[in-house]
Length: 436
Image (cartoon, rainbow, N blue to C red; front, side, top):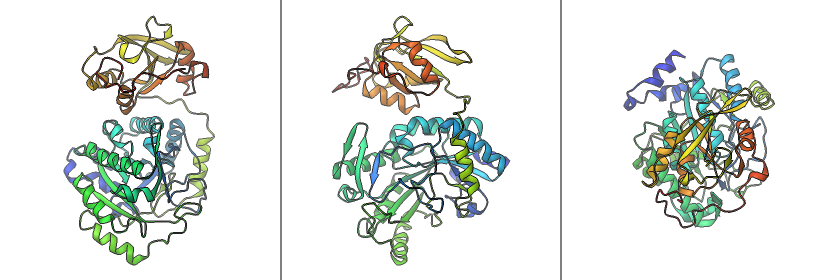
């Protein structure tokens, strides 16, 4: 992996040396370097009228398809076996089978594990962009090198025909309202990544009669917002979807639209429309060896792997109960795992009140070694800030030890510990005093 090590650590980002090892970003790399997609993200926050993730056939190669879903630990075990079998793996990506950033805990933990165990491999992510801005800072911290965002329109009216719904937290939005939010978030995500050095490719699905006239405008707009590469992907009409009866774009339409988009950005023209569990060179297809290895990993007990964030913090007043609101906590009890359970490491001071969102960023930095924080209550603004840094926020009530035992095993909390009322934050401005 020496060549990759040089590329990964090359400080001159202006020459884009990483492209040389990513088979999707440089056609010359596709015959030499392999990629692997780790299928750890089953949920999706956008319902596209061309997508059907219900069926899997090893002869299919299309986004949204995967034979299994792995946990972060199982994905690392699968990757361990893969790099032992072959020495051409350059890129580790997460592309579903849902949206990686609709599954931020699993996605970010997988990326952390890969970065920790294989620092010279390139990290890649594919997303619809709805939650991109929220997690942009953490992706940069993890040294993500390549990102693909699928943007199918800039027009909410057109988006209303492409998307059945958009799920923003607990809100399910339909029609132009949902499509408009998605476009807004996609543009914000691109802006959040501007200047980070992450190489950005934008995919647009070419849908005849829906967005074929708009794709050149998409290429022009995303170039203005920092994208480096464009990929016009012809629609694959999938059975049992709203677009099942639409025709696949003919070669003349594809050529015309791509030529117009190429006036704005370099094109990727060798796309294999990869599965969410793709493995190997782009032209290899899905092999029984890789499918068998995936299924074997999925049957493993979830491995206990070293984590860059092994600890759990608790907002507690006396050290026995989870009974402090995030914003009211003067300190956090930090617990570390050990062979027989867990132990208290320290009581860590919280940032002082005031300062608005900066307070929550300071808290996230102060708990950078923690995978989760247990609180009796939390508002939406601090929750978003902490979770965008990779820190899981868990609202619960009861004995600390009853919550830590399952959390350190990545198991659900007992139902009896669930909060029985809505936390504060409705209409709260997030002043930094603890209620935002």
